[in-house]
Length: 196
Ligand code: SAH
Image (cartoon, rainbow, N blue to C red; front, side, top):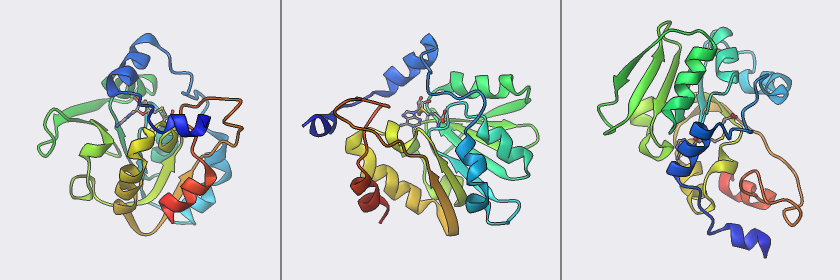
């Protein structure tokens, strides 16, 4: 029943912006995620110069890692503060420009050109705007999506997939009756039905 009650729970964009303003960002990993290193070969399968997508990217340091390895990184995040902190914390110069297809959206791009971060809702994006990707790093993204939006989110991800792409999804296994977060419980069966 606890799992069921999460179905209608919603975290609004406004609430996410507020988390960033208040510094309630316990999800951010300053040292980066060890699982990306562990599964790097699965993501890249020996290929270089890939396009890698970071949905709901926050200021994930893994974006810097992959860019430093020569890949091209695209992220999307509603909090402009998060994106500015990303560039500042890595001392990366960047420029800002509007995104003509999405009203109110901005693209923040590193001067070197290999990191492009869209400040807008993930649901505003499409492959006609950002193209398709060879690799995906989904950590704290599917689990942060409101349960009612999961299908839409995954359909978009599938739409952004290039042929032979790899999708790394970080999962956390726990008893949803003992723990309410982080921040939504996604049953394994649902992951299988969503991604097929
Ligand atoms: N992947 C990151 C951040 C995870 S927290 C990491 O590993 O650290 C989830 C992030 O998604 C938050 O930064 C939040 O501001 C952002 N977010 C929430 N809803 C969003 C939406 N609809 N579109 C884009 N970003 C969103």
